[in-house]
Length: 269
Image 1 (tube, one colour):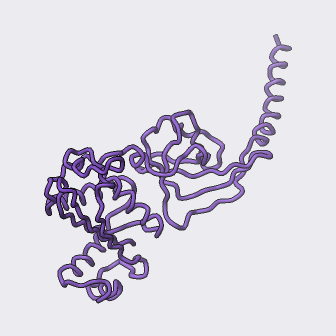
Image 2 (cartoon, helix red, strand yellow; image 1 turned 90 degrees about the vertical axis):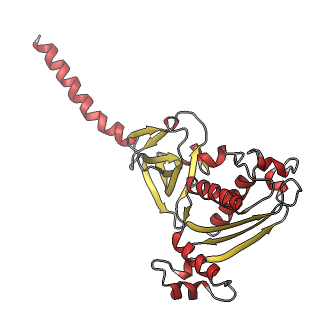
Image 3 (cartoon, one colour; image 1 turned 30 degrees about the vertical axis):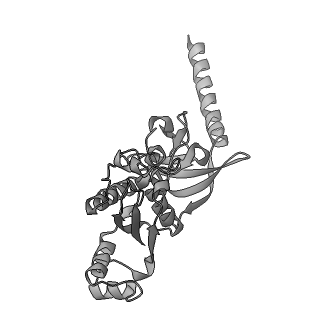
């Protein structure tokens, strides 16, 4: 009986000696670490398969991507991890509710928010003869969709625009910096504001129905006007690395007559 105890103890000690060497050999090393200067980027799961979310040192499994099929991940950092002779680029992801975070191999993620990829029609039922009420309906849809996609409405820019509108001014008559200084909008840096984009969109039928150009689809809730416009706005925001925005929308014309007209103004900061 004494011999058995000694044998087990010796074996246990031997295992204790070799385990740290094995663990050291499997360690991941962070070769570089970069924080994106252009602001957060948004991703979602590329597929529904099982993929690990790791802790900061890539030594412990925290979560599994397959358990977050509808999550939009915010990515602010990237790192190159080295494991033996293998190198891999990882993104540090944080869920939009900030409850889940960790390192994920970049190949398991796809650019864009989850909701943005799923929405195909706007569901709006605009009137045949476009009115101011339709302006507000479309604008509210776009602001809500942009918010879900990670873009925030800038109330300070809205104050600036109200001043423009109430005084019948244009950017050519008074610069952004002059208005900000005149209205004394705190916390708004005029140097961070991109030039206002004012687009007149005459041919809305192709935005409403890219396949057949049927403008009346927007009266049934099956049109794509809101979705298409949001995609255009997001492309502009991404191109200017803007985090916040102001949007003004004006609709006019008739859907049934095929003469809808849109003018929107976009300010970016």
